[in-house]
Image 1 (cartoon, rainbow, N blue to C red):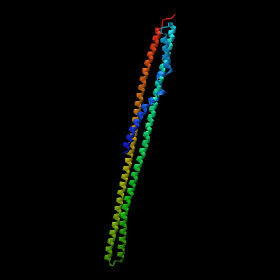
Image 2 (image 1 turned 180 degrees about the vertical axis):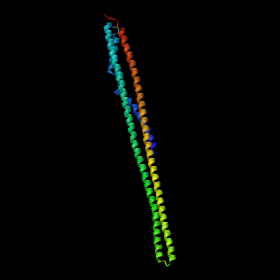
Image 3 (image 1 turned 180 degrees about the horizontal axis):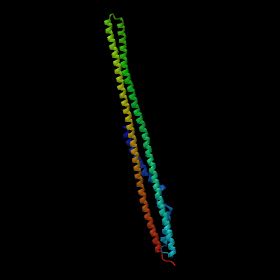
Length: 278
């Protein structure tokens, strides 16, 4: 499996893990954000309304009714404020869970990215080492071939020079000299061809190294780009989950406010039913 495919599999698994953590988080923190109905403020309002209902047939003066209404308004306001506080607390908890889940996802991706990049470096370093070894071996083979030729030519030249030294007559010496010159020329041509072959080999080695470096840079960029895109995906999904959670909290708070408004109206109705007292 190539690194980018492995990375895509990792990103998918990480994104799924983030979603699972973020979805479970609100339930896990339910104990930290209690329902409004369990709070002292809500209980005080309910108890006071029960009291008012029990007093609804008891005569009361206008001042008493005004006092009851003031107490009712205060207890209703306290319950509304508690609802707001619980909503803000829930938002803060949801945001905290979303941020922690995002950081966990990013940490997982970056740790795996480090492993992927280390594997890439190892792979391309090995390719570079193989290219260097192959180049050195090829240079050695060329040098061996031409060293053998040069050794043979030196041996041939020594023999020709000995023959020339022992030759009788100018014509024979001239013939041998021509043979010597041909060997010298052949040696020079061989050295030239050797240098050309070595130059071609070196140029090919340089191109191979450049290709390896380019492939390494490209593979590294792919890994890093995929990770950056995965992190952005996690951030977007985390925001979506957080926004969904906030909408749930807003809906719950709207229901709470309607319930509190109903209770306020019931309490006022109970005060209105109280007969006029002297």
